[in-house]
Length: 102
Image (cartoon, rainbow, N blue to C red; front, side, top):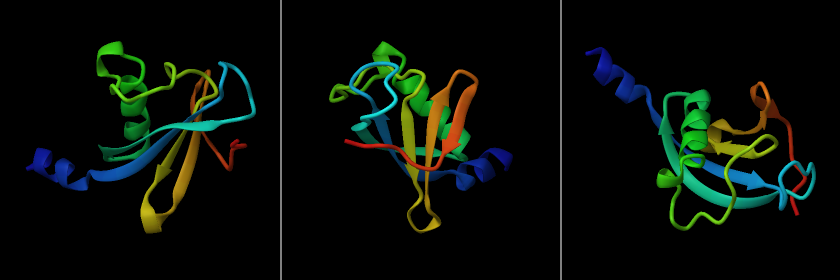
């Protein structure tokens, strides 16, 4: 029963990954990938995306970016419920208000 309930609470989020051309830059973010991810919370989605794009065997074949690292941004779109940006910092993911995109 509990397993079925947790499955029902999961939803699909549209996710975009933004990276700068070079690691550790603070401006000039470009969208490098877009995908749908199923999860029960933003934190779970962030962890899943980080794992996918940092394990060589799980990276999609059409991904042209680099491994995820400090400073990279994930955009989560929930449709009518809004959008949220998260930036990877040394202590984990931090919600941010906006990014500078080229």
